[in-house]
Image 1: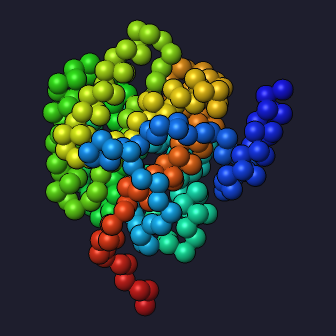
Image 2: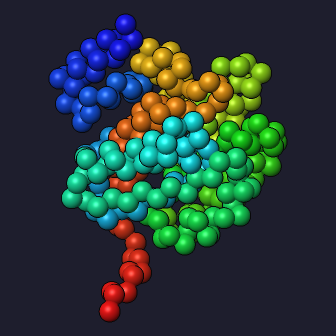
Image 3: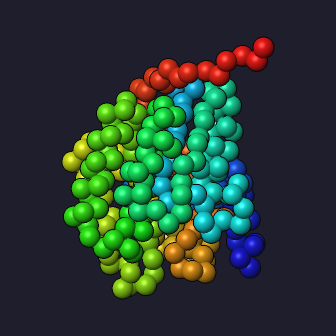
Length: 257
């Protein structure tokens, strides 16, 4: 029954919307889930700067814990969709996610693993592990502020990708509070905010995806299906995040003798 439902909905959406994959049944909240630095909805654009380099910073949701193989993590899926939508623009997505990290860990390797790559756009996924292990929103927001400042001062554009929801109420309430804190600090710094918490919650509440497609058996990490959906939805918002960007000069490898 589930297989039939997914195929039927996929086919209808493909016909009606011209979507680029028959598997794009993920859906998007009609009110949006991505916001500019001023809090307004991010525009959905259809062009993207050629030669754009995107670096994805984060923890397990960026590395891809929960996926059956690394090629099913969200940065890989994002690259795949961007390549299909913009085959002549040579967009590059570099995955710099390390499972288990908190914001303080991200900051330690920020120069080496992110800024040294001269990114045009940094997508920073954060908040989950800090909610679970640090449990001090004030300290975490101070660290996030340091990261925002360093990334902005480097010349890269930044967007914050928030944390996932969890069904367990004891863990879920602090997650919501962290999500709200991240939204607030994004507004304070005029940084775009990608509300993954709301997006994933909406997938379940709207019936777009089954709960076990969104979150795995551990009730925390994403699945092949939800990583695919996140990659597709991220590809929707990248043109708006990159609007007006001019790819930065980067050193090229010397030619072989």
